[in-house]
Image (tube, rainbow, N blue to C red; front, side):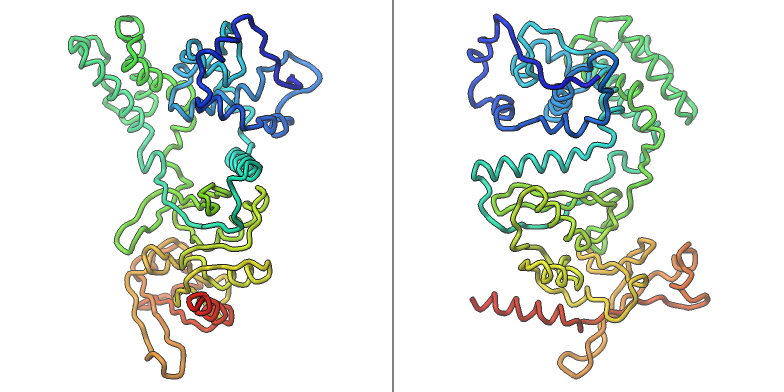
Amino acid sequence: MLPKQQSLTLSPYIELYNILIPKDNMLRKMDELVDFTFVYEELNKSYCHDNGRTAQDPIRMFKYLLLKSIFDLSDVDLVERSKTDLSFKFFLHMAPEEAVIEPSLLTKFRKLRLKDMKLLDQLIGKTVEIAIEKGVIRSKSIIVDATHTKARYTQKTPQEVLRERSKKLRKVIYTLDESMKSLFPSKPVTEGIQDEIRYCEQLVAVLEEDGRYTEIPKVREPLNLLKETIADDVERLQTSTDPDAKVGHKSADTSFFGYKTHIAMSEERIITAATITTGEQSDGKQLKTLIEKSRAAGMKVETVIGDTAYSEKDNLAYSERNKIELVSKLNPLITQGNRKKEDEFEFNKDAGLYVCKAGHLAIRRARQGKKGQGANRVDTYYFDVEKCKRCPLREGCYKEGAKSKTYSVSVKSQEHMAQARFRKVKRLR
């Protein structure tokens, strides 16, 4: 059953917080600035309201996970530190002598309560709200950009993840006592995930049964991380090659496997919106989402500043309709002319080349037409025809038997012409 509000902290030792925790302590300042009651609103549907035992306060559970993220601790080490660190207990609204939770409750909270919560948007929204209230944000402009994020388990098998963590633990043990090698189980000779899990469980059992090193911090942390991986993350590990991640391009010659984090921030460098896509997605397509999320968070957006990726035709039209000044340098390669929407390819600004619907990057570009002589100049992009022959999306895109696959673009939209005039006026001011 969900508690109605946070309980009051009553204790004869409460004055210890005022004596021992400085006024400028990060957790004290965070607790004073942020109203965490939004957690009740978000998790309201995740709890029963008329029967059952009263649940652990969801705000406290949420704060536990914030501490876990800020200080990069396993569940077990987080709870252990909460027993003795008064700044943790103060932030969690606990009495100094109050008992902490069981670590297993954090796993249940993550899986059962937070699975549908839009946590990132909530935290950004609260940050912007506080920044506006305190007068930190005064501007009406946002800056938009994207950053590449490699998949956490970039093309690694679950076995490789477990091996890395067990190897890290063994290396720490060997620095203390090399004779432990003779007590450790034999490494698995098969590639099966269950054999790797069984080996890790046996490794943990040997160390805990021996007991001499498990309380040493440099042993305890990798040990707890391995245990948590086995107990809590095994389902996720079994799909940890991350089928949702895609190949994106940093330049014409370099790529990455993972995601893109698209960010909007105020001129005061406060993040006002963020969204995450797979690595091959175009930066420009996220502009509308970033603007609308920024406004939903409380920002008044009158000007948007971005690089050439954001100057595509749809963004210019959207900005004009919503009376937003879009400051984005034109790239003559990003307009699609009269091509149908379903036939458009995406321009990758980092590589300076187009990417087809299947995610394949063009291999070269050739410019046709002469500057200033009548017709629009055209850039033709050439794709690897061998990939096209095997591509599952080739129907309607690649003509069977063709010796080449090209994609051509030109600049001729009214939106781009208007944007060019706008930028010329800006430069004259």
